Length: 515
Ligand SMILES: Nc1ncnc2c1ncn2[C@@H]1O[C@H](COP(=O)(O)OP(=O)(O)OP(=O)(O)O)[C@@H](O)[C@H]1O
Ligand SMILES: [Mg+2]
Image 1 (cartoon, rainbow, N blue to C red):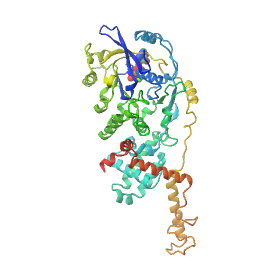
Image 2: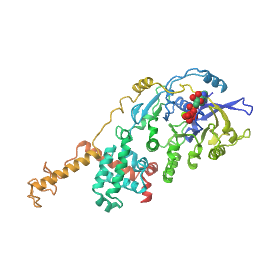
Image 3: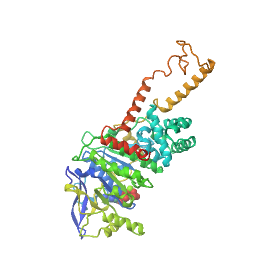
Image 4: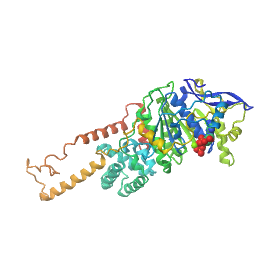
């Protein structure tokens, strides 16, 4: 069956429906991306499950979102249900072994898995603007805000920091507007209000520290299996924009942090992007272009991206063209739009003279798909009608108790549970404001005199109650913050390699193009 070079997907059928041969996905081309599509209930999640199992067994870590909770069963051993055993026989999966997989559960809300966080800085102005659905003009202001934070060494960790920064910018709108243009108090105020809405939607949990370390989703077990990170996304899906932005952020972080590997024997990580249409729904062209760029370039970092969606029309053509491994489940073809989707899906395959692709797509049964993978030299294989193998892990959700146990036993248990709120923009700006007030008070006390007697403590234009220098020597944590912010700034503007420059381009260069 599957050897150590490929993943067994299922068995293709001859025109008379009898067994033809095993269909495999070559690990060598696992980083050439993929697509799993099909109407509701046709077997997409199960296909995702068996692919994730296959990658894990091959030692490849997997990241996937669990939209309905029904993928969580991958953490538990499967059981021999009749229809699964029957399917195993049909595809000649012998022996049909059951297995539980090493799963790490994650949850942006920290309820159904380890909390997953990013800092505002890491997210960057482009993705934040997308998340907040800002207008182009507002996005311009966001870019300026990030620039000012960089220049002034204000570390942006959580939404509180961003709020404080925006408040500060609103106060200095005149001065900043004169320098950068287009910054007015009301325009900043509008962004502040949008930010409040975002906070009310629960995004506060997601921004802050400790931020996710990419290494934690790239783990393998001692017996050489890749960890499967399962992101609980049922609650998250109530805010589709947060869901899509988060996954996009994660994808660009992977791209940014991982080294070039060229063409590895097997992927370094496989990333399943379920409900992928959310990524592209009313996204501006420039963002779609960026996504296309990341998808194209992330391949050489050894990351395979697999989009899962109902309709192949949901994915822009430029992205679609890069998805080499395809599992197309049944589509309905009642409305003209549906018929168009069927035709599009059919046209993307290398035809098989044995059957008409478009007709086949509408006739496939549950857990059956048109499959084409990349074979020798990365050429797409001729499309085959394929019965997908049954999973080795449990079909369906895990119980809350089982989940709790696994979360407690996970290798990252305890590492992300507590939010750390270290000194950042919010605290620094608060302190600045207080210092300014104190200085003003002192100024008044001393009669507002512009004259000072050198050496008598108030020889500074803005003397402080503590006397001495204008700016107190920064505390250790403060200094670290400034240094970090400076590093971010350098990374963002210069880039140490082409890859880095492009990544920061992806996250931050939208406005650069417009400016
Ligand atoms: N490869 C398979 N082997 C055995 N049974 C399968 C297979 N694929 C799907 N099934 C059966 O079909 C059911 C529905 O499949 P699945 O949940 O994967 O559909 P889906 O396309 O993800 O649906 P939705 O769009 O609603 O999420 C499964 O619960 C299972 O009973
Ligand atoms: Mg599903």
